[in-house]
Amino acid sequence: MLLPLFRQLGFHRVTAAGHKDKALEYGKDLWMKFTLPTQHVLYFGIQAKKGKLDASGVSKAANVNVAEIHSQATMMLGHEIFDPEIGKRVFVDHAFIVAGGAITKAARNWLGNKLDASKRSQIMFTDRDDVLNLFVVTNLPLPSGAFSETELVDDDNLPF
Image 1 (spheres, one colour):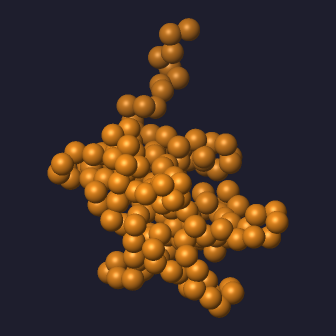
Image 2: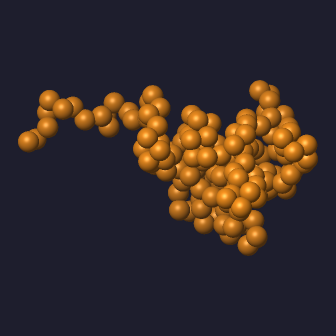
């Protein structure tokens, strides 16, 4: 779902990192690059989580603890990736933390307080609503299952 979205947004070489066994990811689920109008290239890593991202002490079935994200984001920003187009190893300039659910304010604050100022400026949060809004503004069709059955409106029962 994220690969076509980020390609539509102008990112290049959107690539799944690691392997099926999650080896060699170093905190990145995806990496991609973006070319500025000045022809400078910025590299981005994405850590994608399925459910809600919160700052609770224990991860629940649908939630991910922000401490897990902290270690993965630190690893992502500190490990090089190989860009085959230029034949060099490069560092990720910025990291997206993408959650399939909400990212609580407590989780954002906790992570911001744990990272030093330079790394804090490299982290960007994207939750479920942000992803859906990106699909809408880029005129991409929403993925199947984007809305639950209870969120769908029945045209036959409108109050007007």
